[in-house]
Image (cartoon, rainbow, N blue to C red):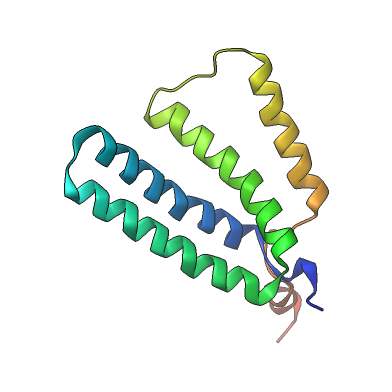
Length: 124
């Protein structure tokens, strides 16, 4: 069985960021019909597949998907808020976002992979 904590927050964050590229591209394509936006959406989701393969080499489906869902929700919500000007209809929905932060904390995903941490801590 894989060590659940061999995946890093950096990997999950990159997975979520490439998903944002895909989602924003597909949203723009749906609104404009321009194929360049469709292409950026497809490229974004090819990046998602690549990042999922990398994450699954080092962790379980259970942990990768839980971390990805939470991180993606946070990053994509922040991007939609900042870049698209989108807002929640009810302030209690922002409380839901805070619960996602708590859930990610409870998953105990390291910021860097163990190998990276050990390499940085060694004196060699």
